[in-house]
Length: 228
Image 1: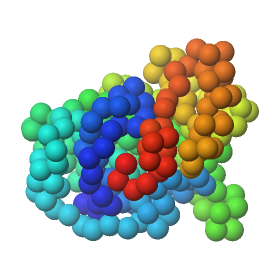
Image 2 (image 1 turned 120 degrees about the vertical axis):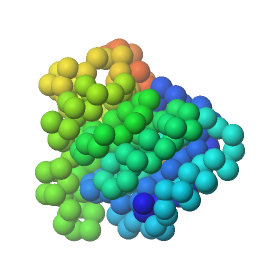
Image 3 (image 1 turned 180 degrees about the vertical axis):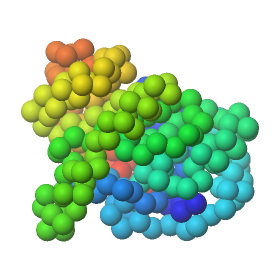
Image 4 (image 1 turned 90 degrees about the vertical axis):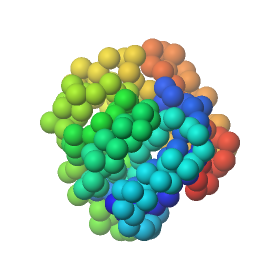
């Protein structure tokens, strides 16, 4: 598998926020989000090819945590991701998969963390907009989303960049029948100051629409540094 990094930290987002976890960050993504916070695993994927045995040895070595997060990039495009999760479950890890929900693989996981990409993610200006059409074509895959929702315990996380984005979120959850208790909103931010400012109006939106609000500890505490 093409791996960007394996590290130990706290889960920064979602309903398991704050949980000590080992992160397996795969490298490579089929989307090109304008605000991607891990370009080294997406826009310009970096890393090394590692056999499953080496990945598992690294996870077992690191650090006594019983939660593993398989993230990216987009881990579901990795050929051996299902086998990796089977082996992790044999070791009795709690497994979270972080995915945009555009590709289905029969992985083993305890929590499918789906983050569908809203139109605010389309890279209309970045690199002259050359990725915009392909990104828009791929970012919502109804069949894949419905299958993931049916097959796994899931949470649905939306990156919100402006108050007007909420209309798109509301339309999405109505179309796909997402229970509001599974929805989390988190502010699009790349710096601690930006996160602080946007959390003010996002909190009001969550209160008004009865959505859960997700922290982003990797931004709030560490400013988005690698390995956090």
